[in-house]
Image (tube, rainbow, N blue to C red; front, side):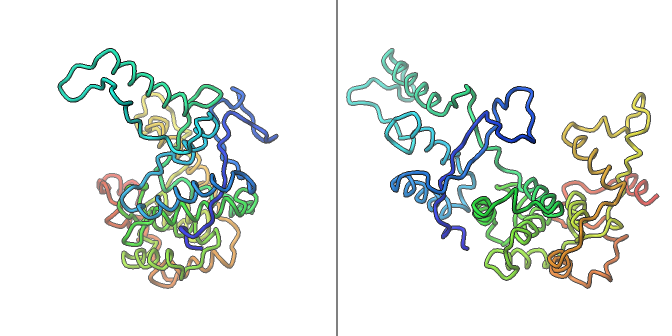
Length: 340
């Protein structure tokens, strides 16, 4: 369904709760944020307000990329009993002494501003004391979760239909006007973002000729096909079975067994985010893990490449990267090590 035409859904943000016997927390889940779906939640007016907010976001999605936590703010205002669903613009009461440019604030103006600030932030505060917020932006995190769930055969359990509808809404809304998707929601289209989002939507059930995937696939093929995706994308496609492990530069797990002391090349010295990514990636690379082949995976191998899958030069593909994704070319020494 077209993202803007999806019905308004009532989701409720719950914080600092467990409820899953498979989850363990050392701090009693303090700060954990979970959106729960309630098919019967909300009054007709509240549902109408949610639908209006979704419609406004959709219509302005190419200029205003972030949701501003609108649904969370609406929920907080309902819970705190202010009688409104949107945080209103606070106009000063008649006769209030409010500071303007180059004019020192009076005591009453300071008190008014302070009260506004306290009301604003206390309204957004959760019952456990923390202030929640959306970790929005990266477009390459969700595809990894969807691919992992797909090859583990738990996609429908992790993402029931209401969740899938919201994934469609989110990914459709953040498609760029040229048909691609970026590294993050405000970024230009990249092969990394476009291929992984295309794969995600296909695994979730969307057809390749849809109004969203058709231009996305054109964007991919116009730039050489999925073989041009950078290394992290090559990794995820190889795990899925839609790319060959022969087309990836080495990530040998043995590197982690080298002495750490006096070794500047030890992967444990990488920046924390890179270190925590490459540790599991090298482990999986060492076993060349590939998910079970399915009809859909075989279709992806046909759809995303510009030549027959069996004829791709995977050795050449190791260093192929779309210009939109090439932030820093490999130094010759790095290529020499990889080719060795």
